[in-house]
Length: 84
Image (cartoon, rainbow, N blue to C red):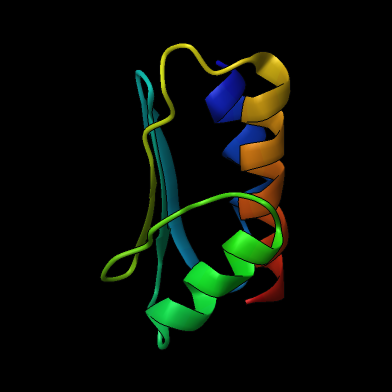
């Protein structure tokens, strides 16, 4: 639920096709991602390691992730997608 809640603000952002969560897997599907490396670098600048591929930002956080760490991860995704 925390992953779903954390990624929900991505819904309706320009360029976002879908946001979905199944168990501990979260996906923000984009219309397109032109420069994967640049997007990956923005995530690192936000303090998280997210490796987008194709047109998908795919999260599989560890089951041992703390609530604060998960919040940091999802907030970084929302911030970077919002800039994109």
